[in-house]
Length: 69
Image (cartoon, rainbow, N blue to C red; front, side):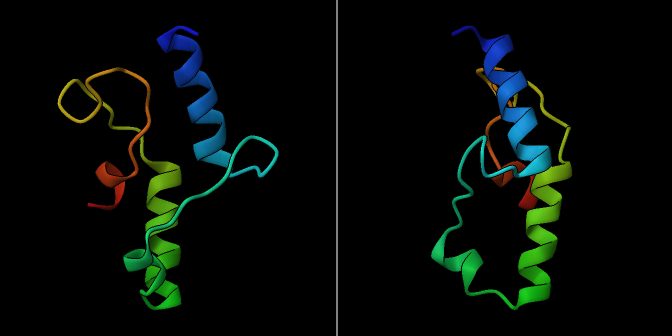
């Protein structure tokens, strides 16, 4: 599968969090946050679009750490 297809699939899942497309994985640290803060982190991951060569060197639009960090 090429990077463009992976980007497309990752965008579809990340922006919709549709359970038919994948599974949301949350670290214990994020899960321990107050519910309003956890919701904000999830929302920031879902709406993140500032991918670049520094934070996404493989061009697959994968990492949530960029959005929440």
